[in-house]
Length: 83
Image (cartoon, rainbow, N blue to C red):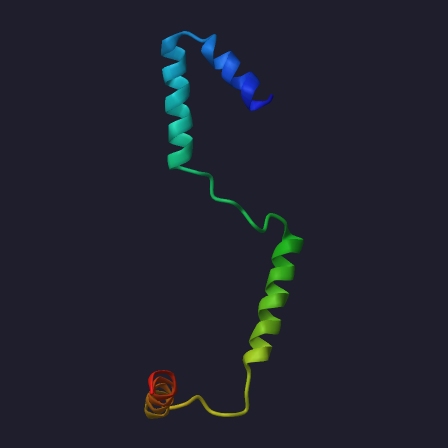
């Protein structure tokens, strides 16, 4: 049904029914359904495999930087950006 046809049908309703319809529409806008992006087991498996590949990309042989090294990197970045 097209929007114009729907509007025409709405105006044929008694005012109390139109008010109930308006309430239902308003409530549907306040509580929209949460989309389910992965509905099948195959989709979940693909997602899981992608996460594992991304974790592999992040692996390195170097140790994580210390807090002092991170602070120095941030200072260097700020100096490049603002000076």
